[in-house]
Amino acid sequence: MLKIGHRGASGVAPENSKAAFLKAIEFGLDMVELDIQLTKDNNLIVFHDYDLKRITGLDRKVGEMTLAELKKLDIGSCFSKEFSDERILTLAEVIDLLRGKLKINIEIKINQQKSDVIIESLFDILEEQEYEDDVIISSFDHRILKVIKRKKPSLKTAVLIGAIVMEPIRLIQEASADGIHPHYLTISKELVEELKDYGYFINTWTVNSKEEVDRLVEIGVDGIMSDYPMLITKAVKR
Ligand code: G3P
Ligand code: CA
Image (cartoon, rainbow, N blue to C red):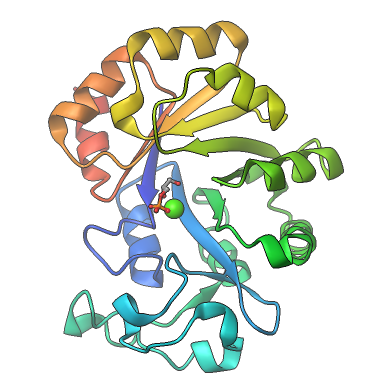
């Protein structure tokens, strides 16, 4: 079962930061989940929110700023003063950091205006970095997943869903995906069994309680994302 650090190990260091990814390596995880967005000058960066307010205090949108401008911002102090040197990372920088150590679940944040640019930039980075075999691409935008699969069938993809859906198999098939990433509260033993019968994987998010980790390990999900991934490490050791 994949032990996946959500936004790195974001319970113990600032989300999507170098410190959070290094913690994920330290914890001996298999994978990290991270969020990607496009800057104004079309660089793929690792950042969750569409605006910068919560993390940096700045009242601007990510997509309105260049990489050089974004690089000046402190993304660590909102977590704790000791992380004030943390800066926004590009996807390529994170891959450099994790190479040979962790796989990556790349969540593409929705951007209907620039989805073509996102896809081409993503392909270029994964190819240059030779990381195509070590990623799962996920998104709540299932259309972008379908396009990615059509252009590059070898890339592994997963449909993200946040609520209970009546026909999960149909959603996966419509996006030509390889698996599904549902919210943990929507997962039952029956769902896991159905997905396995069809040969699809199921990784779930964001599980931060020991009881839920234990339940999900018991019903046989393929991967668990947590802000506190040491919970998963402990559960799978028992
Ligand atoms: O990829 C799973 C999860 O990260 C999706 O929700 O808002 O944390 O990006 P969010
Ligand atoms: Ca995410």
